[in-house]
Image (cartoon, rainbow, N blue to C red; front, side, top):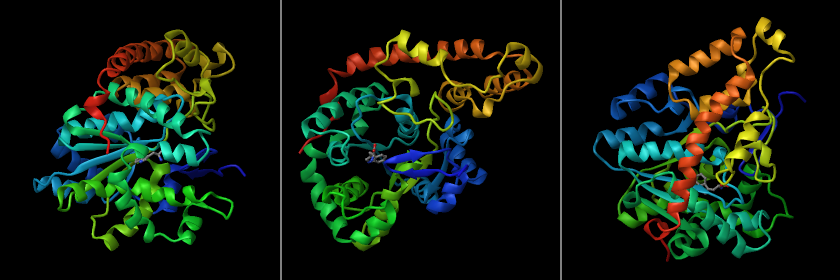
Length: 373
Ligand code: TRP
């Protein structure tokens, strides 16, 4: 059926209607008023807020109120080990870094090696942990403040997480996980338990401080189901409900319904791509262009289905004026896809070079960031 799509923490299929997801998941839209309130505190809005890449939330007001009263809050986000980190994975990290800078918040960064083993992305748990460490290089390379960032792997930080996870697990029934995630009898019991581990870091700041610390979780909207459950159990355990701010998922370079995945290298730019590999992906990417140059000059192209325009919008063109110019010249036919791709490539290339260098340096910095039991 056209218009049909699926968004769960483990699967994103079809062309996602993000407005409909707000209704389906029961989250709140980020309104102009809320943006004004953020701007008053931060002085400027991150492009991902101005452009609605981060577009949905739960209880963001309460975080802003706490901050306005001088009460610190913590940030929490995470990543399941992936054999390749691509810019889609990094999208929430750019924004989280901005939040950390603007609000001087401590960031808890969970690496779920257990999750990716349980959900069969890895046959071998040690391999998941090892890949987790490789992914940590990309996280450190983002430039998070080492004094305010704690990265941990579930298998290595379990003594901190387990007492909280057990409290959470006791308040979640099997039928809740069936309703929320579609689990069945054939799912392994680790999968069924897993949500309680993803919930645990949301309460860790409060446990550590011995008093209520509000938590804000920036994440892809696909992760919301875990945190809907987390928020439901929070009051039963005497913890504040974590607030959320959700991003739309970066479209694949292969087109609006394409999946971005480590198993489909052409679908995204990966942090370990060589310049030649990345350049080729940009060159071959799906666009909203016409069949011939003549037609495009005459009729213009469609930026709204274009994976290249999405890259400009979501990440690589912070300047609104120039972005509007790209949009206008695309629609008018003044801009051709080849030139547009080369212009984008210039921006990606600069970023990729810097990231490669930072990633190399990160190899000596792991101990500044990683906490263990
Ligand atoms: N489940 C997430 C993934 O598949 C990892 C994760 C753990 C996470 N905790 C999180 C993501 C908090 C966002 C926010 O990558």
